[in-house]
Image 1 (spheres, rainbow, N blue to C red):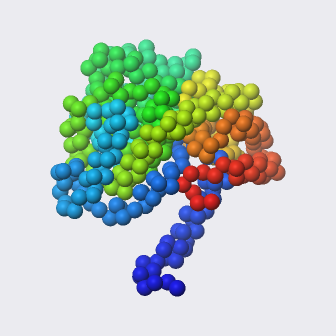
Image 2: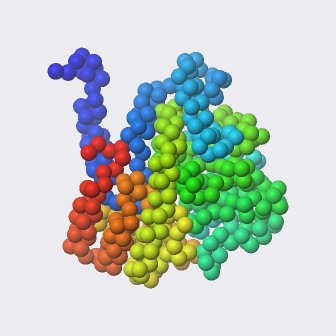
Image 3: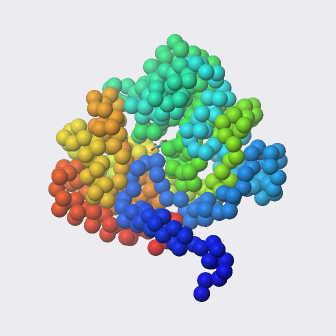
Amino acid sequence: MPTPNDLRDPPLATRDPEIARLIREEEVRETVKLRLIPSENYASRAVLEATGSVLTNKYSEGYAGKRYYEGQQLIDQIEELACSRLKALFGAEHVNVQPYSGSPANLAVYLAFCKPHDPVMGLGLPAGGHLTHGWNVSITGKYFNSVAYGVSPSDHRIDFAEVRRLALEHKPKILWCGTTAYPRLLDFAKFREIADEVGAKLCADISHISGLVVGGAHPSPIGIADVVTSTTHKTLRGPRGGMIFCKSEYAKDIDRAVFPGLQGGPHNHTTAGIAVAAKEASTPEFKQYALNIVANAKVLAEGLLGHGFSLVTGGTDNHLILIDLTSKGISGKLAAKALDRAGIVCNYNSVPFDPRKPFDPSGIRIGTPSITSRGMGPTEMKKLAGWMDQVVSKADDAALIDRVAAEVSEMCSGFPPPGIPV
Ligand code: DSN
């Protein structure tokens, strides 16, 4: 029998069956499909519990020990735990965990170091950068004089000669190094040399690779870059959020830029989830997880090459593979839609020097963080490469796509994802 409290405050399934059903269906979708979008992952049950807690009820403008609202006895402890765990995990002098996500974290960096119309530099979006590294449709490309560097036409790797030439010419206040669609390691030391030559602040955005960095599967920019930003929900497997690491000398500037410069109250439920994710990422299992992400990506890349796919830069060093489908005679959008019907979820993506438009580009972008979180390994990567080849080669063949979807679902049933009730 329901208690009176249940009647006043019913569970979601009773209060709002429509939303409850849609969440349940999303749980099923995330279970029966292979999720290859490289910026997505599965948060653990513990992270989801912290994120879905009463901490969402509390306002706490300010920082631990200096807030503008009372009642912070527990919130201060949670934020301090998140910060101390992250500083230990990344080896950083200072961290701010209040940015709502990656874009606000990056905006706070501009606010800390730039005035409107100052010159800034970042990797262009079509070459694998992020909107907030100064791309023209973003506020960061409109409010600052942004210059984009690119990748080399010959090998599609970052063109450091061009970075240096443009930096000497434009003297940026901020030099961004960070990517969203780049399958190779970032050489932070080379960026540092160029930043020093022109007096720029070097800002590394490691949103995609922060889990690889703490796991030792990618070099760390901490101690090299002045500021390091990241989301918390990609390879790091936390809730959706953002964070900014910096040297102590910039701590005040960064903190003031986040609050009161850019945001009001932090999302304390997210802060708690980030603290839990930081604890999880400090384990030996997580280190192994990070190494497995890269190992899986390399096996998948080899499998795809074996099936005649053309990979940007010829392969991968990280969690991500960018496929140029021109040689397969299908656009990225059509391929991504056919793959989705087959239970293989990715996003269409421009490739460097893409002659097609961004909404119907030549490539697709895939990655291994989510499927590695499920415990999949080399055997599954090889099967996946084969299925992808079948689907993009016959994207109109409904029977083939249904068969692949059934095989994908069957394989997925052996690898239940974290955080989702069976
Ligand atoms: N949306 C993220 C990605 O998919 O890479 C970047 O913000």
